[in-house]
Length: 226
Image (cartoon, rainbow, N blue to C red):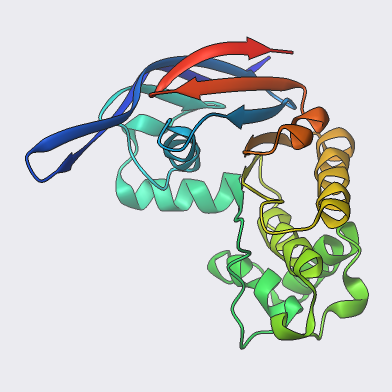
C-alpha cells in the first residue's frame, strides 16, 4: 500500500542570482511500513528530500502525498501541525537540549499536544523503555555517551507515535559497534511497530537494515534496489 507518493517533486533555491535545484522532477513511491535507505554524494538532494517529507521545507513544484495528506498544498501553519502529529525526525548530532534531562527532552514534543501530565508521563516512559533508556531518564545529555544520546533522540522522535520516521545520518557520529546497536533499534521499530522509515546515510554498511536502497545524484533518482 503506497504511503508516500512524490510526483515531479522539485525544489529550487536562489543563491544570489543563481538558481540551485537540489531536487528535480522526482517520482517516488514508498509503501507503508517500508524501510528506505537514501544514498548519494553531497549536494545530491538527499537532505532536501528528507526535509520535504518532514514538512520542514516546501517544494517549488510537483506533488507530495503522505498518507491521505497532500503535503505540498498545506500552509506553513498547517504543515507545522501535520508534522507534529505524523512525523518523527532523528538528527545526526542528536539536537538534545543540554539543560534538560533525558525525560524532559523526550517530553518536549508532547507539550504542544492536548495531553494531560499523566498521559505525557506514560508516553515518555514507553518511548524511553522502547530504546532501553528508562534507567537514564534523569540524566542530562552531558552525562550520556553518544549512543545513549542518540537513543534519547530516537525516543523523542517516536514519543508522538508518528506514522513516518525520518533519520538524517543517524549513525554518522557513532563508532561501529554503537552504530550497529542503533540500526538494530531502528529495524526493531520498523518491524515491531510498523513504522515507515526513510534514512539518509553515507555509510553503505547501514543499508543492510533497509528494505530498499535509493540513489540520488544531482537531484534525480538513479536506481532503486530491494
